Amino acid sequence: MNRRACAAVAGSFGMGLLLLAAGCANLRPRVAAVPAQPTWQGRLAVSVAGEPPQAFSASFVLTGSASQGTLTLSSVLGTSVATLRWDANGATLMTPQQVQKFASVDDMVVYSVGTPLPMIALFGWLQGEATPVPGWQLDLQSRAQGRIKAWRLAPDAAAEIKIILDPG
Image 1 (cartoon, rainbow, N blue to C red):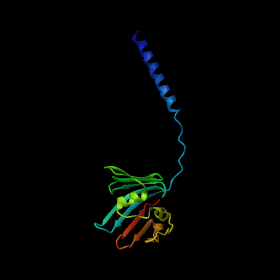
Image 2: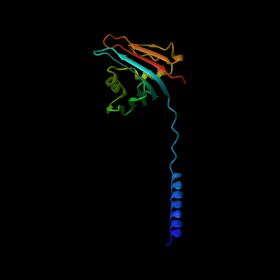
Image 3: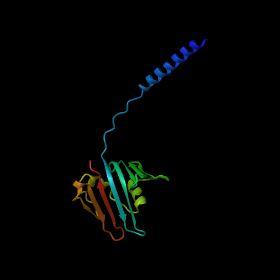
Image 4: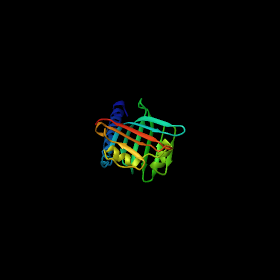
């Protein structure tokens, strides 16, 4: 075969592969639209009295509900600190160092923070609902400005949650 014939065959072969690839690309199954889940983002600060006292603050993105959701925490510089995921089957805490599994979101929160926090009520609070939690006080007076504050005054387990939501 001469050079022109080889070039023509190679060109035809290349064009055929390109058409085949384009045809296959159109055969991908369509992904059903996932219903939009509630999402909140902003800054979160948690402090817990104890020995030793604990406190942390982070930027956050929270998606989902009390029964199934994801909470991503980032440092001030935008570095991922942790991702928490939960559903009816349990909860997972992912950090840059490790992945840990828990029986429930409540177990994961106690491990992470050192005390129970009202995760179920938190979703109501974010929506501006004064969901009561025994032992906790709630301040939603500045909710319209994106500020939520809750605290537990129990001497052996005092805790405070402050949330500042991003506008939008």
